[in-house]
Image (cartoon, rainbow over all chains, first blue to last red; front, side):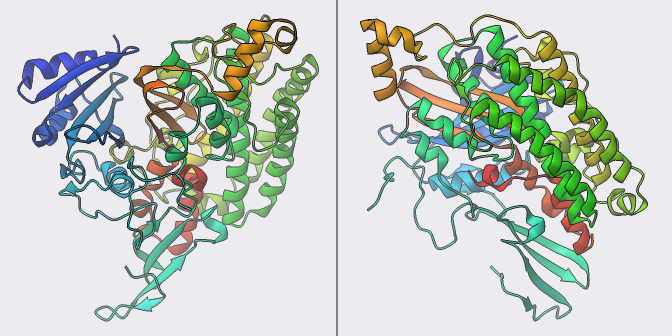
Length: 152
Length: 398
């Protein structure tokens, strides 16, 4: 079965009101959920015996400055028992806020710090939201699209 | 943030000590702020980012081919594995599959990289714990491995050997013969390392029951690779989601039971043996035929045709000056590199550069459990724990 297909259909059954859109490319399914329902949906994805996404592989963002909610948060989940991956997305304003997933998967702690550092998105409920790669006195968020590659 | 050597006013018996950023046991530029009660670690806060070069930003401004050299500089102990991982991700986006000979040579690259990376890990990890002899043995054999890498790719470290749709060059028969000598010779060398350590009383005292990572914690913290398998989780992407033809090879996934430093040691030792098994099969069943895809839109045409045909000349010119187009879409593709799951998430809006390239590096997540493993142990155990997690800062910071 293609990656994430069963999860997306389960989400359509259970959380149709929380889903914004779904899609597929090269056999990889993804689902975009409403930001305020993110934690609830993630708990379900982790705890549902049919899905069992026990691992949060990665948290990152994509910046679309021209779009109404320019920050697209992207989460890659993995289920060890089913060997299945799912890409979950949520939209937010330029600086967030986005609910933190640290309470669902502890690995979100460092990954959300990196996303905050690189994009300037605030994660609500994160226990220790500090920069991680850049130094503390740094003021920019380099992966945002308006940040230039060179500044001479 | 407290970073200087100082005493806390509420608890004067707690001393804050900086370990790193250039400490021999941090294996690169990693800084850990340790709070010590005597010799016991009560708090450990890692500070990373000293090797941050902004690779993900750079990728948005380069063609896909131009990004390959950057992948050398992530895990600089196994650049070949990252080369392969990146090209597989771009090929997934393009919907391209490379010929069987290329797949087999890429498997060889990945396993050579694994052996090379584990040899460095073993030598330095043992050196950190005072077993200096092991270092000389593993570095001698690592040199043997580097001679092979150099002959194959032209470089020891900055290999940049893969291309989207193929490889920079084919392997010669002579090289395959020399790789055969290495493959046949390594297992007895691994036996020698084991003779130095596996039943060594000091080694056992330093590693058994130290830095225990339970399976549920490893999973929750996104730990992958040998550190996850040492905790008893038999997860390896080469088996779970085979790529580059790994499903055709017969090999085993070693796992540990307690998840201590000793288990992580045993798992990596056995992985080197299994890598030799894979190399042996790849050499035995090496397919003939072309190495690269025959698609001048993405892969450089052979030089002979470039010099004799106008169309090929144009293709070469376009590929070199502008790069190839990728369709709009997004893929996440990951491979099992020596440290764990290396994933590339490419968002393409069409065009010649990714709109966004995300690198999911195994060392980053693996390092995030460090405080958990250090607290409650001795300072000397922190040194052992870092070595056993085998982080590479080039890959943590990207």
